Length: 186
Image 1 (cartoon, one colour):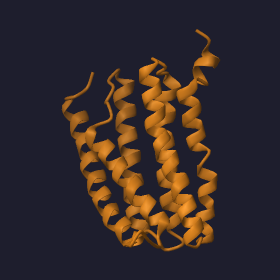
Image 2 (cartoon, rainbow, N blue to C red):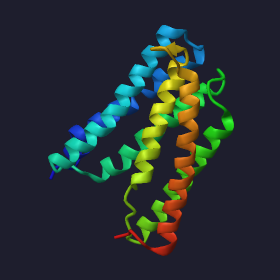
Image 3 (tube, one colour):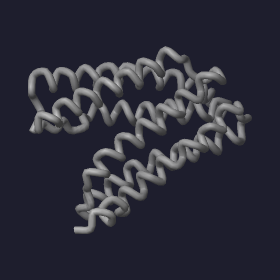
């Protein structure tokens, strides 16, 4: 197989396109009004949807690559964490919760890396996927920020963010327990 072609297959190209959304998120620092907040939230949701698309294409057409296994979770973390970090200075999200979420991600990545070096692969858990979905919903609502469809988007985003935070902690503990006990691996 051609390594270069495998690296730039369709799922990996979709993932790279998802990562390219990150620079646009810097417009959040301008504390955009309702229209641009909604535009950025739509761009964020579009990027989140491509997360499901690249995985679907990779599995359906047997295009799973080592590069894809590396890029996909990296893209998720780059987009969600960048958006959360960029909302701190404009007062849409508290710094402490962002720090805790990023710490969990780093710890889980470290656990998975250690396990991988021992030839053990820890699959993404259902809890981890639920955490990611809750984070995407929370970040989207916090990006919208202004009243939308009769709802206080900021309040909705804050409530869902706390749910995401609980799932973040719980799923992080789940990864640690699986690693420690050796269950669910290989």
